[in-house]
Length: 70
View 1 (tube, one colour):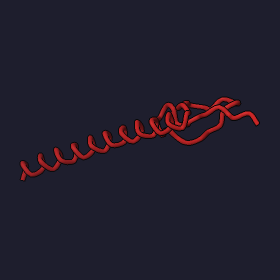
View 2 (cartoon, one colour; view 1 turned 90 degrees about the vertical axis):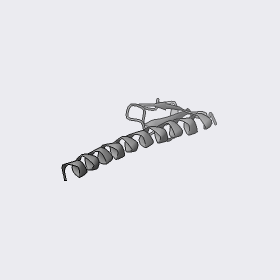
View 3 (cartoon, helix red, strand yellow; view 1 turned 180 degrees about the vertical axis):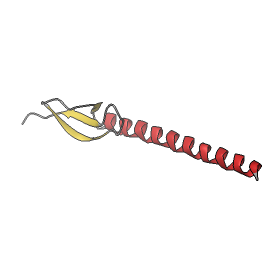
View 4 (cartoon, helix red, strand yellow; view 1 turned 135 degrees about the vertical axis):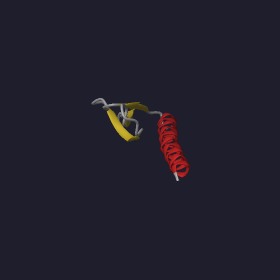
């Protein structure tokens, strides 16, 4: 039974690593979407910018874009 426990913990650790990798991929994907919308990822949008989405990264959660002048 000790061999089965080692395999179980190895598989469990591998699943945790895979979950971390996929989270990083989605953050990169959201940043690319923000760039396509002509925005940029920031921690806070400035007063002359509008929040157009989320980047979902820890340090830069907002996708900001300059407001259009009417």
